Image 1 (cartoon, one colour):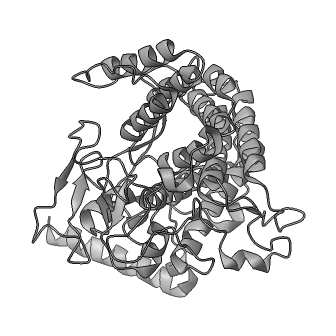
Image 2 (cartoon, helix red, strand yellow; image 1 turned 180 degrees about the horizontal axis):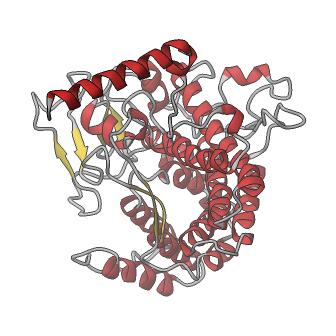
Length: 441
């Protein structure tokens, strides 16, 4: 570049600075294409941003993040026999031992995350319909994710959860029984399925599996099987993760692998399944190779689940695999031969290499045990186990101390008798809520 050209550039730059100096407010007038100004929230771009935000909040509530928030999957896994507490937080030990109190600060945040995810999904429906009605699959997806939020509320918490709407009338929710929460979930899935134009097959299958899961929880086995009849084996709806921000990471991986506060369990609390010692390819875990192979508490053996090996590993919320397990359960009571054939078809076709065929254990109780064992291994660490143990009590006449971890806890003391979590004490600010209606299954 010649000296003359460099001089001209310097003069032009100085002139630009003089112009800016005359209008100093322009220095702060920076356009950020990644941010939606609050005044533009009621717009197509605002509606699309809310849709994306609702998906992010749902993932945070269910899966967790980089270590600040454990999601519903980790909570249920620790309350049941999937994980043991290899950390030091007494609030987490409290709910692992099934003795959770209303004023448990950790659980208060977890409950709020789930409520926020539910509300944002429902809010996004109205915003999308008003400002960004196409593609319709966005609206259908929001209805479906709201439905799953209700499912996790019903499976994890006691009867009597209030659902408040910050923009509604009245704004403070009326407590719903567990059955009413499942009914609300079904209504959301029905609304999702009613959005047919331009709604993707993946979202329709998401709603079908969610609807079937809610019906299964209500004991409507035939209705649940019918709901997933058209769901293909290959279907899966995953949460997706990245390391762009901490909130986007797969929290099930983080709390197990990185912070080492959750360790894969084995025969936990007498009733627990042998998830490690079974050497089953569906639940593979390895002893942490770092240091002494112990968790954050420097004492508990640390076993890391290979299913989610990185912070960006996807996690299934609903799948064709779950659809086939639901159909198998519908045959369990009335058609043992068909039930066993269905389980063996899953074992032959849904994993490579195929698993060996199962034999009929001979009695109905043993068949039930086998069925729920199959569900436990196929659906390990996907947020199903707590709901399944509660169903064993509610629908299959099992006792609480016959299915949940019980007896002496390895960190001292005895397990309690919680089969669900209480609604946090902070919800008593809602005059409609005076505590759990029922702590039973």
